[in-house]
Image: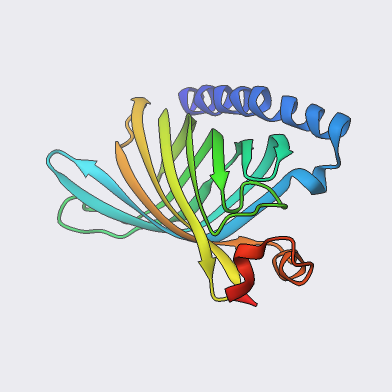
Length: 204
């Protein structure tokens, strides 16, 4: 229990280091609302067990605060792509348990959904960070890397994300994580109506 608390304390410190500068920039340059983005969806985490993988499923939520926000189609953001779910007993991991993945990621975005004033139909993101993995009573931490693609879906916006968790401390699992999420924001319709993005006319 003490070891798990130490691991969580280290993660909290890492989160504070990552998030506080972004809040400071936001307060000086623009409001937090201008820099805030978030998405919600579902994810599957393929946990490595020897040469096999065992899936855990969860709800995904990713709050983001842009540190660099001055360009329409580029941003650098502090993000917290959290998954909360469960692993169901199978042939490779013979127990059912609560599963969570809580990484802090520094992410660069290009194009679609980089900022609230983006111009592009298609976008991508690359990021890296450090995160905690909770599998039942076990807490572990490790390095995280992610890549994402973004585009329009009907009149909204979506993100397809891949994330790799490399376990460094604790009895956790290396994992490949796949996520499908809807990008939140009531400003999508406003952007189109204002005719700020001529390439988006097909989506009117």
